[in-house]
Figure 1 (spheres, rainbow, N blue to C red):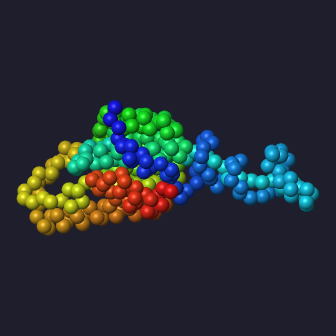
Figure 2 (figure 1 turned 60 degrees about the vertical axis):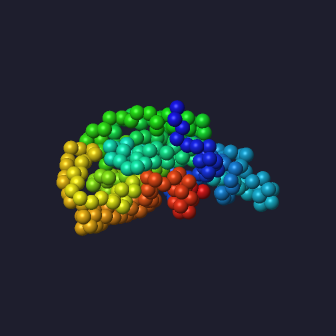
Figure 3 (figure 1 turned 60 degrees about the horizontal axis):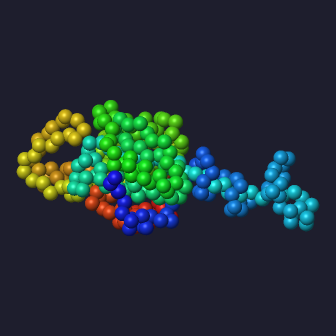
Length: 292
C-alpha cells in the first residue's frame, strides 16, 4: 500500500491539535476541553447544590466552614467532529504536481492531527458520487484513512459538481463540527455552497489549492482551452492582455471565496500545489493559529 506521509512528517504533526473558534457538542467523551459544564479534571466554577447532584463534586471544605453545600463544576471533555472534505473533481487532476496529489497528502496529515487528538474524523470525497465513510477514531485509523485516499475515487458527473455536493453535505444530517475543505474552488456557484455550510452551523476551514500554471501562467500563442469537467472548448490567443484579464478574474474569484468563508466565521488559505506539508503547517496552520 502507498503511504502518503513520511516518518519525518509524522514527527512534525505529533502533539498538534485543531483550534476551532466555535464550541461543538460532542457525541462521546474524548480528549478535547469544551466550555460546557461537565465532569472532566479541569475546574470551571462553583454553584449551589441541587437535589440529585453527585456528592463526589461537593466542596466539603466550604461545607465545613460555611455550612452551605457548594458544588464544583468542571469543563467537559468531548470529541470534536472533524469533516475532512477532499475535492475529487476532474479539475483537481491538473497541474504539476497535480492538485489532487497535494490535497490527498495534506488530507492525510490533517487527518492524523485529528485522530491523534481523539477527534471523530469523517473523511469524504466531494465532486464525485461516493458514499461517505463512518467516523474514524484513534491513531491506528490512519491506516484506513491512507487506504481510502489512495483508493479509486467515485464517478464524476455534472450533477456531482463541487457546489452541489457541498450543498448536499450542508443539508445532510452530518454532525455539526469543524469542516476542512481541500479544493481548487473552481466552481462559479461555490459562494452559495459556502453560505449553506455556515447556515448549518459548521466552522469551515477552506484551503484552496492551485497549481503554478494557474497562479502564474507562462503561455503564449493560439491555444484551445478544454473544460476538464464538461465538454466546453474555447480558443484564445494568449498575449499580455489575455493573461492580465485571466489573473484579474482569478484574483476576484479567490477573493470572493475568501470573503465568503470569513463572513461565516471560517478560515481561508491559498496554497500552491507544489507546497510541502511542512511549509503549509509552518506558514499557515501554526502561524495563524489553526492548530496549537
